[in-house]
Amino acid sequence: MEEMTFTELQQKMQLEKKKEGTAKYASRHVEDIYSIFKSLKSNWSVVVNYDLVEFSGKTYIKAIATASNRDEKMQAQAFAELSPVPILKTRNGELKQMNEPQWVGAVQSYAGKYALQALFAIGEEDVDHYEVAEVSLRPNQLRNHHSQTNQQPNFISNEQHDLIEKQINELALITGKSAETVANYYLNKYKLNDFHELLVSGFDVVTNDIKAQIDSRKDK
Image (cartoon, rainbow, N blue to C red):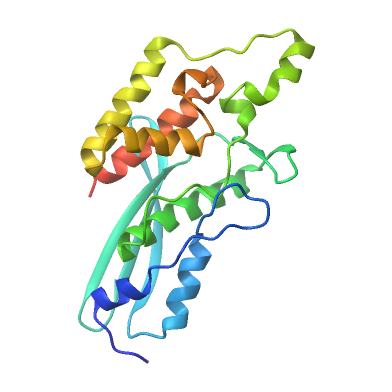
């Protein structure tokens, strides 16, 4: 067993994101973090505990990651909203929806990953492992669908666009990053060129995502 300080442990936990198969983005998963931690065989132990909490009528999974040895204990926490089960896009382009237990497990894993990343100060912001289907967020890929059903894309209003910008500015202020950096992160995450391209059906997905990040940082 290797004796190391917590700072040394953090330095050894800086694992890179990886791109799997046909995935569009590289990412890291909670299992990757656990694997590298176990490989170190250090004098530290790590555990993640979960709880359900409620903010403003919404339910979140709260993850508390704890690293401890005989003399010290370090903690970090993260939140993920337990939102309605979204439609997901598989690697072969099909649309599917998880059942509720699968979705709860995915949200818990998401919260746990960010708590561990905060605990070990791992890298930059990550891209979600689970991609929300573009059918919910952006109409560009659905021109054939709309032509067949004679339905026009229902874009978000200017008021909804302004609310997203307000959230981005608030998150930028909390994180110390520029509003442009924060906005580009979410535009890339949801495959948008501009938030005006967002469909009404995807508005809650984006705003709840940003709000969860704001709330998690306010609570620290």
